[in-house]
Picture 1 (cartoon, one colour):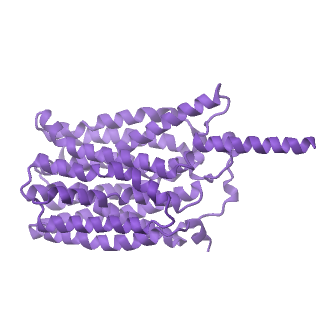
Picture 2 (picture 1 turned 90 degrees about the horizontal axis):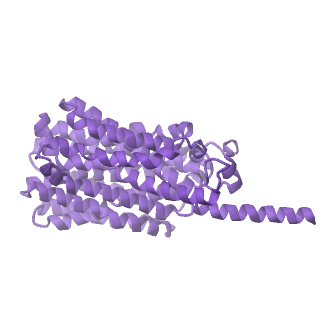
Picture 3 (picture 1 turned 90 degrees about the vertical axis):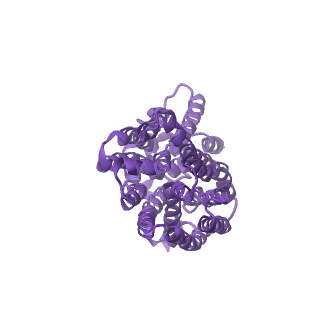
Length: 447
């Protein structure tokens, strides 16, 4: 009888601990003077770190888009080289993003994200003053390397630390990312003018935001207990988590390439990334060539990006409540097609409407991140799926911005590039519907 009472008490204690740990991050080290206070402080610091990191994941790209014409003139770039420059982000995301899970297992995700923020800061500070196109590209690649590893690890961190709030935390992260994207697009030209009209300080100023993002991650640098985020099941018990015990040996090896859902999600991610980087790299130039002033063109790009602030919070929450995310994919795709049609027929006349529609369409990114968290059951599955979908997707997206630059230079207008953007939206909708089906990669890989 006594042993039965002991077992009951132990079961109740573990259940209550698991419920508490689903709401608060598990402390990385034992022996803290006050676990409850420590975990509450860690929760706030971790959320702050996620938000600041997300704010830094796009200004390196959109600030350049707002000043692309000035950078081209200053460095003597042709249209094709500028197209290559707009293809550098997905290339770096594909090459460096695939290393993120391995780095997280070795050093811990907090240390990797912290290093990523340092790389972003250094790259943004160096690139305007590197001298020449080659130095500019190299410094840009350094910043994008930091963005790449952080891109991949954010869904992993959310799944590991907030398993019962994947939708809401993905929304917070995506909303911050969209806000950082839009504020860089809107403020870069005015800031440049305020700093004397030279594009170099106008680009370098965004390094300050990266430096601020380093600080919240410093306490997590030595947090090796969280390194299990890439390996441990998201449903691990509180007892396992609090003692740092993982059971990777009990988990079968996940052959991610056997999953049709993983491939559909990777292609969907790649096509939405193609549309996003074409938009960030070229949309301001489309408006400027249509007669819109440079400041207004940057503001239009900012409107496109800022649409993601509210929608990036709403869409993941809606998506997690639906068994199938296909209808959301279709709505976003139709908005994109309507926006491209407007850019083709009346780029200046309906500029604000097209900016809004393309902003809605670009919210395929937070939807893709949400589906990464929903299409895998375990932390290991999310890590593999995130790395596979993002790395493969960014490889797919590399030719898009470059091809737009080549078509623009050789055709002398935006008709062919916009036709290409519209054509790519159709397969994006098809694979998005396939990726949105209610199934997991573990189930498909096992079959």
